[in-house]
Image 1 (cartoon, one colour):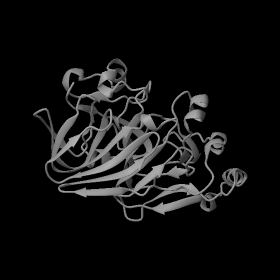
Image 2 (cartoon, rainbow, N blue to C red):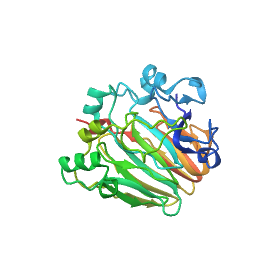
Image 3 (cartoon, helix red, strand yellow):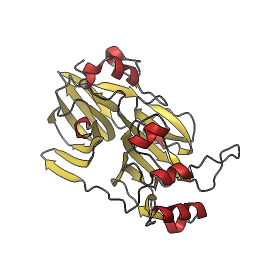
Length: 319
């Protein structure tokens, strides 16, 4: 299939969610507490469906399993990445994700390294990004004593910021922030602190002190330094490249011709509008669209004025 695969996203309600996925991105949401758009997902907790072409209505998980030729005959047994948009109408829990080894042993799925591109942030918005404990013993003592103000590292954020969040990183997205998240295909989260809140039935969410202390890394979090290449009518910024994935921001200002350099690409339009041309077929693009350029698509053109986030798995960097 020499054509893009557009995806129908899955919405997830969250205690901290809002309605900006509808008001800013035009998605149909189930309630005013919708926190996550699983835009490109083959995870069993929220499978995106193909929205066009001969595979329309098929789940991405089934397509990946039944048509490996579309993904360059990958080594990974399951589709390895997940793209989300998050609307943090309130603070997410202070949390950590395990690495592959711990997650496979204890949860039966991949670990979770992720990264965030900040789409928007209200004035004064901040995230939690790391902790101040010097040893695991100090970390354990501070968590058990609830010394959150002494433990947590708070960082102010603005639109356009980027944060690399490897497994083992203590983190939380703050109120008033929308992000595009690229992550391993995992839904394992260990909550450390949830601001003492309860759901509409008066029940607090579970906390996971033991697992969190097991997997949290000690030491200052090192963020990436994005690198930008400014070409005529096109700007590309490499945001991160690790053993799991590479993520870039593409800013299209006029016609640009591109070639595939990875088995397949995941793309999300985060601003503006334009057109994608593949084999003389034109596809309109707008803010909020998500699609995959599969292995048979070797060349394409973008035109218009738009910004996209592009990602691909780094199968060759593992080991």
